[in-house]
Structure formats: C-alpha cells, structure tokens
Length: 342
Ligand code: SP5
Ligand code: ZN
Image 1 (cartoon, rainbow, N blue to C red):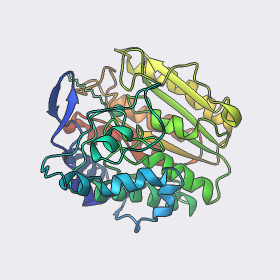
Image 2: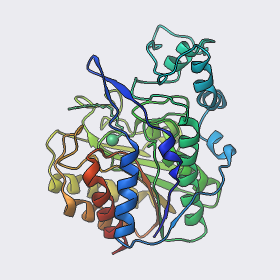
Image 3: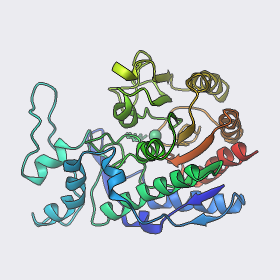
Image 4: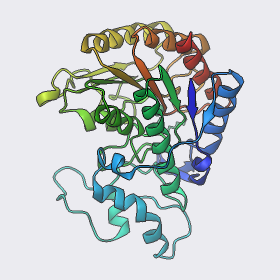
C-alpha cells in the first residue's frame, strides 16, 4: 500500500487552543504525522511518495470559494493588524443572531468561518492544509487508477471542516475532497467510514442531502462529547440523501469488543449501499491512552478494524484524521493498515 506524505505539514504548528476557559497547548502537533510516518515505514507497508501538485478546482468541488479565499488570506490580514501570534476567533454568529454575510474585518471573518477556537491560523497554515488535501487527492488518484488501497498521511486533519467552516483542528475536509474526486473520476457510489473518536460533522454536513455518497461514523456520543451538535443516531440524511447517513454514537468507556460490534453494523450498511470505492477517515483517538478521548481500544482492536474493512472487498483510501497519544498513534495506524492488507 502506497503512503502519500508531505513534510509541509510542519509549517502548521499552532501554539494554543481554547479549552475550558484556558489557552492550552495544541494537541494537534507535527510530531503526530512524523510518528505515523516512522511506524508505517517500519511496518514495511510500501513506498512513501510525495503528493501531486494541488488542483485547486478539486477543493472548490467541496468548499465554497469565499471560504477558500478566507483561508488563503487570513494570515496576511491578521498580520496587517500588527499581530505576531496565531490567529484565533473570539466572536461567533449563533442561530438567530446572524445573516449570511461575511464581515469585512478579520476578527469577524475568523468567527464567521469557524465552529470553535481550536483552529489557529499561522504563517504556514495555508501551505500545510493545501498539501494535506493534495495527499488525499493523490491517494484518490491512485485508487481511481486501480490500486486496491492507499494511505493519505494527511496533517492537519479534515473531518470537522464543513463546506464553509473550520473547527476541531480541521480546515479543509480531506476525506470529503477525496470522496468527491472519486465521484468525479469514475466511482458512481462512494462510502465514507469515519472511525475517528469524534463525529465527522463536517463530512456529514457536506454530503447530508446526497444519495451518491454514504457516510457512516462511529464516535463518542455527542450528547457528552465534542463536536456536541451533530452525530446523533436519528440523523439519517435528507432529500436525495435520506438513508445515506448513519451515526453510531457510543458511550464513554466503550471497549474494543463493543466498538467492533458497532463497526460490523456500519459495515453491513455500507455493504448494502454497494459502493464502488470506500474512503476511511482514520482517526486513532479511540485508543485507550488517548489524552482527549474516552474509548478503550488497544493495538489488536486496530488490526481488527483494518481486517473488517478489507472484508468489504472494495478499493479503499485511508485518510489520516485524529489521534493524540503521540507515542502510540503510529503503531495504531500501522495496525489498521497491516490488518487491512492481511
Ligand atoms: C480531528 C480531531 O480529532 N479533532 C478533535 C477536536 C477535539 N476538540 C476538542 C478538544 C477537547 C480537549 N479536551 C482536553 C481534555 C484534557 N484532559
Ligand atoms: Zn478525533
């Protein structure tokens, strides 16, 4: 299995995120991707290649042009204020208190285009996020050209990013961009399986009214867990997408065995959808030792996830999402990928 990786992710290293009334050091850091790269190499999974040059039009198939322009220019606008630290939002347009009009001032734009303050924008953020998306697109190209599988070692992650919003360490929705690329290049039906600990609210929202892209997510129950506002079991899609969205909210403390039972149900739904190709949003923050999560998975559970996904018998693109137990995420990712490869 080919791994697609760019060192550009190092250009994005936020200092702090807002958590419970304090600015705390960012959990989402460059060492994460470096650990994953090391372990994927050590596992002998296959070659590691650089991404193709980015086709910006592929981003615009998922994200609004005004949002892309905001991401591209945010750092310059922030710096023009005389600020030297990371850009973070502080004011948000809640339901009933907004119009759909982006403000002129960067402080207003930061809130307008975000769902939280865990998305610092730094000097290198645009380069890093576009390279991350390029990794996903290059993996998708490999799949279209016939590869059985590929691993897009994306950083920053993407599944909390909506068509027009950043949040939860995510700016561009790499998995959604890849899924749309697959649709645009030969796949009639695509399924996205999101195994990150957190609900893939951005991905769900992007495809919620579409019947050609099935979305299934297993995650901490949003009643008590970030991202809080989407991810409930009764969210089944709307319009043409009715029935093409499936959520499996699971309680804090969920064991490997209970997780794998829910995974089987998600995989049965995906099999019934009969996708041509599959995208896996691969977060390993379900790990028992993850510092921000509350599931209890261990190494062998990750290998079993890979093995069961392979049971779908579909060409599969893995896209890196979360996982914050830095010393262990590489091994856990390698378990999934080697479990899949058999
Ligand atoms: C891609 C991804 O996994 N994003 C996750 C975003 C989670 N944001 C909320 C973080 C809450 C931090 N909790 C700290 C607990 C410290 N004990
Ligand atoms: Zn996560």
